[in-house]
Length: 258
Ligand code: CIR
Image (cartoon, rainbow, N blue to C red; front, side):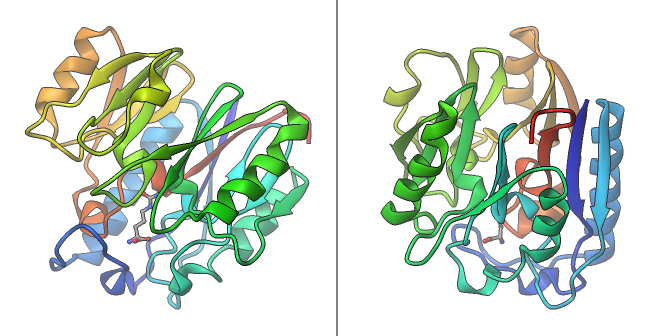
């Protein structure tokens, strides 16, 4: 059984951070409706969805993935790279702290959860504007005792590692090779996004199923023809805030050892 921690869309979403996309008017009510459909889709895939209340003070707080990491053995408070996002984590960590021991990335380390891709016991971390070398090193030290290896991955032209690569099957990744060095993923089957759909590499894997954004029909066809069970959701308003589907939840296995 999977638990998904989510947080309602902030009424201030339009004041979000943006790095690689142009600012466009965001319809917050529509974003809220899309987020509700996203939560329902996670429930449809068997998740127990927990929903924290919206935070008016933090425009980007719907993107809970960035503030904390959940492993079977521990949770980690991340210290996000954008200063405006540093204080978003407390309610998320309070929830996580009830089921996992919590460790912390400390200054001068920075780390965004969107840069952290776990595949089994391998953890890939993007070298991004949000996640610095100290953050990578601290993550490595926190995870090593639990048998995880942490590999730093070069990337470019996008916000987070998981904008460029996500896991879509037991040993399959979905990748935009224009945005990430695929060398570290040589041991996996790679499905490349359609080059006309650069934002198409972000997917959430729940068990063997995939939650995937609307709007990338060519890449969707590639996923389906690989035999992957895909459910789609419309997250267009959240995409205007440079979010996608991984960023709106923290998935953790219930019953895993704290
Ligand atoms: C930010 O720039 O931090 C937000 N506007 C978007 C964060 C999206 N997070 C993610 O994909 N993990």
